[in-house]
Amino acid sequence: IPCIDCLSTQSTFVSLHVNLKSPVPIMMSFAARSITALLAAASLVTVEGNAFLRAQPHAEQHVAADAVKELLLSELSLVKKDGSFAVLREELRVMYAALPKNRYGRLDSSVVRYALHRYFVQTRGWFVEGLQPNNGKFNSSSPVEIMKDRVPAFLQSIFEERVHGRGLDLEDLAAFAATIQELVHKESTDLLMEAYTLLDLPMDTPLDEKNTALAVETYLLSVILGTKVSTLKRWQVETVLKNAHRAYPAWPDVTLWAHDLRRAENHLHKPTNPFSGSKQVGTPFPEAATFIEKVGHKFGSFQDHECREMKDMLMEKEHQGSGRVRLSEFYQGSLDGNWQFSESVEYLRSIGALDETDPKMPAVVIPNYVTSHSNCLASSSFYSVCCLNECEVLMTQLERAVALPMAASSLLANLVANMSSSTVDAPRTLPSSLLDRLEDISVHHGGDIPLHGRLFAQWMHHAFPRECPYPHTAGTTNPMTPDEWMAASGDNAIANVEDMSRYISAGSNNTAGPLDIEEPLALPWSMSEELIDYRPYEKSSQEASEGIFRTFLDTFRPVAQLAVVVASGYAIFSTVRPALRGEEDLKLPRYMV
Image 1 (cartoon, rainbow, N blue to C red):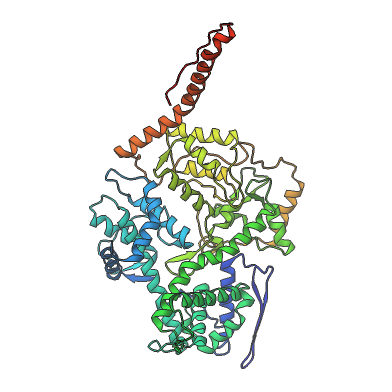
Image 2 (cartoon, one colour; image 1 turned 90 degrees about the horizontal axis):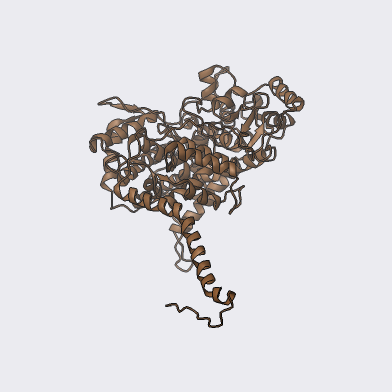
């Protein structure tokens, strides 16, 4: 874990020494805390005693309700007019078609939150505050200001009033997503304005390359740090920028990526003619603000490279293809100085990353750990940037193929058998134990299986244990960052050396049988079902007829194939039967072709 060993200052020099166990910043929140210490060190020159700079939100935590409502109405007015809105709507279309609808053919509130949460996580890596499944309805009738993590609920209350409780259609869903996105864009523009003000850069005059790069790096520092850098002086920020790599080793890669992205955007949108004699006039503020929006959209994909490295390191210690790393192995790497995997058992249990099926040999669930809040950056007061969920890609393939909220077990088994992931090759033959589990879900629902229920998500975890997180039952986990968890519990989210050593010792002395992915009972399984919509799914007449037709095909296709074989065999037998009886006058039947 990054830690500051010493912070000493002289009149114009700040000496910083950071002790890092790993070149890869696994624990993002602790890297951010180290950057806070860098800012504190830079501030010691001008403050007295130990008045360290305190981390504070980098943007206001409230937003005017009228502004949110006005922005929503603006997005609704762009329906069928704005090109970017049309792109967003198309991105949502596949998932929308497969989601359960109410009797009006629209999405209810819980399904809307589920859809938007998945959309932003999959396309941006954004974990938007307020879109969690357990987030309640907005219950204030006429607020003046609302907390930003309550914005989705406030928007939903406006929609429900507008559509008289009938639910949202595709265009409403796209407008909802666009409004959240525009609020994020506005916040990023405000942060960029703060960077310009801090650096004393003009916003009405295009900037040269050097100052544009400085403004972009200052913005990135404020986003990764989560601290309002406008409270600092320019020389302090420049000092921190020079030393940021010591607390956050990936900082040079981040800035290089941002500058490469800016050059690519400039080349795409501002092609230059070498024979025209025109020169680059600089970057005006609106153009810089638009670029910052693109940074926000693409940063999740960039950061996900570190997530994949983290997954690869965990898989080196994976136990027999189970998608799990025994806790003893998890902690051993940390003590050896190779990893930074050192979260406490209590914290791992709270975020749903600990499998205690065998209490004597607890294990860390790889996809649950990778996608947990432990590895998120608080990039905005609206959202955190988290590792991309690889299972979303698989679910999108299923939704595109099925295009309905429910499907027959035979169809799902065939689709999944032909789906590949980063660690699973296709096509493959699914083990009988996995097919039996799928049939259990089908029996539980009396036929077709809901794609968006807990049981099918659990089945997908068994089918892709390294990509699909294990879905815990509601209320048994509490997704929080290490800092949030420590503030709420009063405990340390990081295990001490004694605790790590105890689990390592227990792991080496335990002779219990290993987890085995081929064994049905090896991975946890519960028949507790939870659907994203509490109402029973009501099929439209078209969906019902399509479902009946598909079920008919799935059921009778083998029978039809057998009938063809029998009929062909009988025809052949009838043809050669006279010859078998020794009859000389063999007449061959004629067929119309």
